[in-house]
Image (cartoon, rainbow, N blue to C red; front, side, top):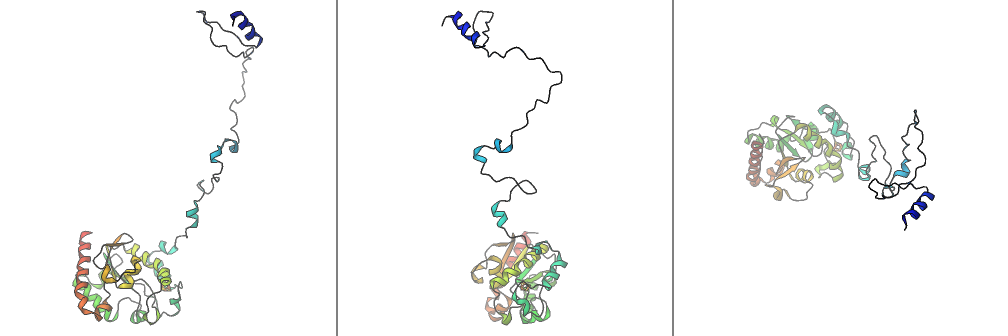
Length: 272
Ligand code: SF4
């Protein structure tokens, strides 16, 4: 296009046509009109932010709004979780009182007394059995009677007095007729045992008998198959062995129980 004609078109559109000193013609600049006078007291030039709804990109618009104390909405899986059992916050005194008054399962109706547990509350070794029997129910102490005497002898064989270990059961109340604990009973009673373990902080746990081992390890295997394997309960090494009451009926298995005890001693030594 002829340069003079081009300039006339640009002037008619209000576009200044600057010419560089070297004669080159740059791109035309938009005509801004006459310069505005400078306001000595300019208003706040920061424009208010657009409403949040307008600033949310389309791919975020289905995300629920931030809520809650920390500004985060609760994830659905967290909302579905059961609240933490208050038993896990109890100290020894509170735990003992809670067990003594417990009515979480039907066994509270038939027990003579609860059997909390005895021994050193800072023991390296914690012995966990099944449930109180008739003697324990009367006396309020685990592992009394002939089975208790055999357990004491087993502990002495590895150099420990009964008072140097902590002894507890999966259930704190006696099942009538010495039947096996029912799953719902063990479930209701479990927080008490877990809290005891957390308070004692033993280096090794010894599960004595099928019911204790199966409940602690959530297993259906026989004791004979669980013996000699490495397990953990609440991250504490656990040894499985026979119940002293079983050993009274099957004394030929005492040699295996001795192996299990030596295994527990080895673990204790490794953790010192
Ligand atoms: S067995 Fe355990 S859960 Fe059941 S009443 Fe006794 S202490 Fe409570």
